[in-house]
Length: 158
Image (cartoon, rainbow, N blue to C red; front, side):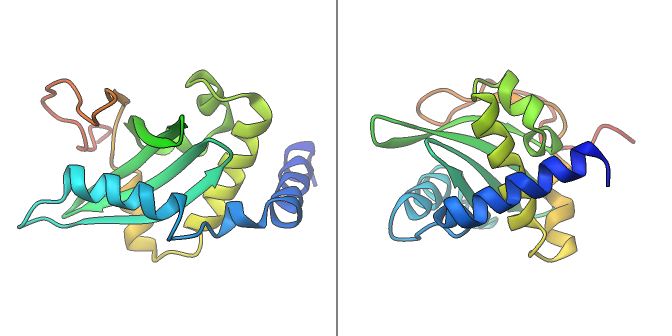
């Protein structure tokens, strides 16, 4: 095993044994508040939002979302007891280095990246694939709004 694999195994062990609530968040608490925020902000009558998984480490969360044939991930932060959408992206939110770039401390970023990967691994491959469709990064304001963009959520890699 290489050093990175051993480090990931160690971090996964720390998450499972030290922070079991990080792997399965309480729907009546923080995960429920996050789901409610995303549904109330983005649900549409003809395009309901799927919000799964919600992975929380401390005051930060990575959330997978899908709507119709689109999808992505959201980085959420808890500020003074209220969850806010910081940004939407795709695969970048699975990488600890990107989470650090987005303002998380390195230890929290590593734990969150590992926990999010583990939570997503339990989902159907079709749903997981939608999370990677979102290309780029879209910053959000405190009300969950983003600047007008022409193609977010569209895979422009092909």
